[in-house]
Image (tube, rainbow over all chains, first blue to last red; front, side):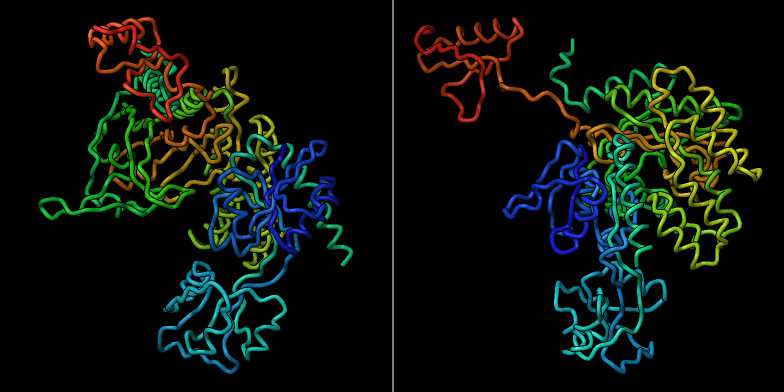
Length: 212
Length: 368
């Protein structure tokens, strides 16, 4: 039995669709109820829904053998896992955004508001820029408007929220998408079953890519 | 006489492992809990975590609660040309633990072989690592890699560190998609990229891996590393656990310190590697000693997670007595039961959470 941690929400639904299309269906997951764990002994998978930012924890600590997490979470928390496949869904980017017309003259410490302090720190460390990280948990866009920060480092999908708040992307930190991850120890003991899932999902990703 | 049923997994392991290491001539090594902080500062990349608990000694010297055992052993040993220092230890270390990211006291046992090493020594240590895992659980995998293969693969790509470190990181993650992107962004040729990515997919039982590896080993460095892996494979042939030893090049220890064979051990039911080791000749040279070194550590605290048969009872017998019971009668009953191999708890009242198999009430029958 392979335990799969799925991220709750829209991304999770898309991920399950992919697993189903790859032959790992579990019809009970489609039923409307409050259950969190679903199992199909015929296909040998047990799915459970967890908060997207917790998927890597479930996988790293071995409660799930595999799971699907956004690259943003993997970069931020650096879990000790295998990252086996880019599922090419949930695509967006981690970006630096600032009020329109903002110019960073580099003469003073840059104030950066973000939920992703490790990603922001490593991005600016790579550029030798002195920064002051302001860790926020939501509504990041408001920080530069109220003067709390000069810029923000956040996930940008369509850019609508930024535009509506007179912000613009000034740099892309890293492209983001959903990744299939595996617990390192589980991979050793369930190699064949996990490889088979990776191979089937990979075929699907490649076919989807050709259809676009 | 030790009743094995009373021992926890880690306690049983300590005893069995010490006997194993002594049988191969490894001498027990006991060290202080503290070391001067400077030792770790100079070699912090060698440590699994660079977070160290420090304090000032009475003379003002900055000290550290030992986060690692190997550095102390290397520092305190003597070189004897042609000979090997073979030591084993069982020590607590203090460092930030992998998955919890908090300071923990970690009990580890392991061994080091330092000096004029040859292929036999490397085999002996790898074999002892496999035997150590087997003593704890039959369900184990020992993954072995060779950093010489990785060095050869990365030869000529970028500067030391930087790009090479990133490539090694993705190899450790078996992350082919990001590795391809990284190579593309840094101008690595498609042929070379393909070669590096092929490397990620090579893992599993030893003979199959060697077969797939041979055509990729074109430089002298790669062929030498391949030769060492082939020698190790040949020496392991016929051992009881050979199909539990795999080659997997995602085992990537810090290349500033480690070289040659490196390995990691896993046990079924434990979510992270429980054993880690390898050759660290570069550390030996950095610390002013000659020759080579190979060793490993087994993290005993992780064995807590191994499934053990749960106990249904806390004691076999709950012996109840009161103020009117003759103490000599209580003492005699407890002695009699303990001698017959039963565990017994003498109490004046029934403890709320105590689970007992049998109740013996002396309150009426044992009056003096």
